Image (cartoon, rainbow, N blue to C red; front, side, top):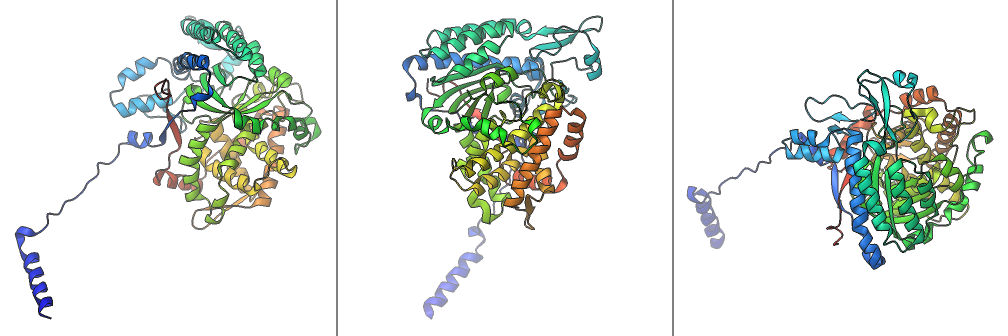
Length: 546
């Protein structure tokens, strides 16, 4: 008892003496600026690969190909904005300058191209491909050379008349440099197919005639090192969806994974016949020379490196090449794994019902992404009523609708291959991962063809009851209704494409392409949880240890 009393007295003496009273410290955090919050939308990822699979000559080629691809940054900056140096030199805040570099201009690609620099107006729908004051009607009435070409700029002369400038003339100095680099790399190429492709691509950059090099790229089968380079996708042109943007990828094939995938292209003709649409919309025969391969991507540049990053490629886009040879589908495995780990899994922890989170798997994410690319080969490339190609008929809506088609037909392919026993994972994995993937991609915003396609799919599936939203803000997939919604949306999109129904697609996109308030609040919860929207890359020869 005495010991207890002594202890209490001693404690009281200590606590009552002012000179031993602890000093209270108040920790304050400096609030983030708006631009720092913008940068937090991206998480940094190192692009590396096992270089031991390359021969000594391939290792020598790698820095040359990276240097060639890097030049695509300059060309895409001009296409997306104009004078890069004039813009960057005016920006004094380092965070803002970094964000401009990520976006290749002063418009936020993850916020529907909202300008983030004072004094900058709205982004022209036609980017820098057309005069900013040109209307669609003026262009359509104008009699100018090669107006439908994917590979020229439209400009206005001193008298106000429109004329065209071919890419190889506008970028004469740059493409000569890139062409020389590709020829230098071709001299080191041990694979005959790669050597031929590099030589033809080098020539194509000098005259904007790409079909021969596209066919040569399709013929390559045994190469480990690969490069995709030149003006390719037309997403940046949101006025007509026609002008191609420059980009570059440098890739190393994963031979093991590629071996596992090679059989699936052979099912395309059979899957085409079984599409859930009338026979007149599936008369085209997809090329059977298509192949599926998995790669590590070690360098991105230009269009593919702007805003949300590509994780799979389906090329060439030339409809004639596609019908003759099919396409090649490249799964960018290391980039895909990064997005799965750093973005998709955290999203699932917030928005997917806990009982279904076990169905979020990388294998399902890989399959869904892979068959999205394969599904680009299904359906129609040319309208069934003589309106020309689907791309030219649907104009600025073509890219979003094509991405929507690939999304939903990719899931259709997974379903059909499960029925055939070619895929053995639980189909529920693919469906729940597919649902989580909608939340991932819809965050790219309406300025992205992929983002717009996901908004359409979310709203259509919601209307069909393919999922329900719980009181706690999580979502649960209704498996049978999702299969029905998949078939219905496939039919709608394939019919719009086959008929080249521009007005109908415009109404369809207007009805289904928006983000409702409830969904936006759920997406805001992802931002509040500090879940990034996309990735930026640490890349190049130094990262690879070259």
